[in-house]
Length: 300
Ligand code: FAD
Image (tube, rainbow, N blue to C red; front, side, top):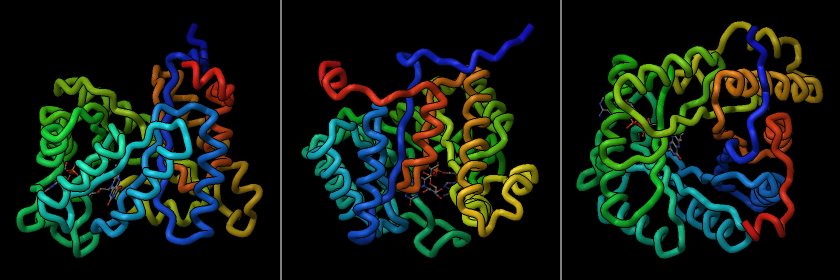
């Protein structure tokens, strides 16, 4: 009979953490507390997002630089095609290479006019994500992660269109896909099957978002095309003013999701941390991750 093992050996388990660049000193302090708490879990990489419209170019860069200087973590810098010429984007890529960054998360980005408006590439800019991936490949031997949308991107006509786009990105040199967050594991597993059937062989890592604030997450999900199951809403109902219980529920929900994926053979997870460590740390603990001794890590 089927018995969930709920266990992946540490050598096979891979996690990564996503952060966004802080806007002020207070946010910077929160981010660094989180990085310091999560670093001993030895993630395969930590990624730093790029603001809509390229608005955080400097802040993304300086956060990545600080990670290189002050930690043993491998940073991945997000980069989009929005509001910049190819030359400008190429310069950012070369600066990353010179700074020792060897991993870029390559994205088209949202339309300059905001979500809901039509996307038009910047004059003289990269056309879209496959072209950006090829551009990065031409500059250096980077690891290149790209996005994947198990529930399709809001602009996509169908899941098949999305899978074709992912295939184009792989053909251009992408080495890993990270998914938009989702709450129904069946959605992810179906997408994985379809991508594999389309000949896509790179890892398609599930993006997991611990629900720190249900209302906010639901709003974000609505904008990005991720569905929020009724059962999830019910789990958070009545907790609007009860932060402590909400946090316990959030940990339980995220743990249930990742452990179910483990039971189905998934060994790699990307966590959207929102720059907060607690929930992600707890879920990683349940996955079997323990802080590694600094000395052991340095030796490895
Ligand atoms: P793509 O994979 O290039 O396209 C997504 C889908 O949109 C395609 O499948 C295709 O069907 C459709 N599509 C694309 N172009 C066209 C077109 N010209 N005409 C018709 N349909 C088209 N955004 C940021 O600004 N900064 C970040 O740091 C960031 N990080 C992200 C990380 C992850 C893991 C994910 C999943 C998303 C991230 N995003 C980020 C959001 C992303 O920029 C938006 O979703 C954007 O709208 C699409 O960019 P993409 O590279 O995901 O799109």
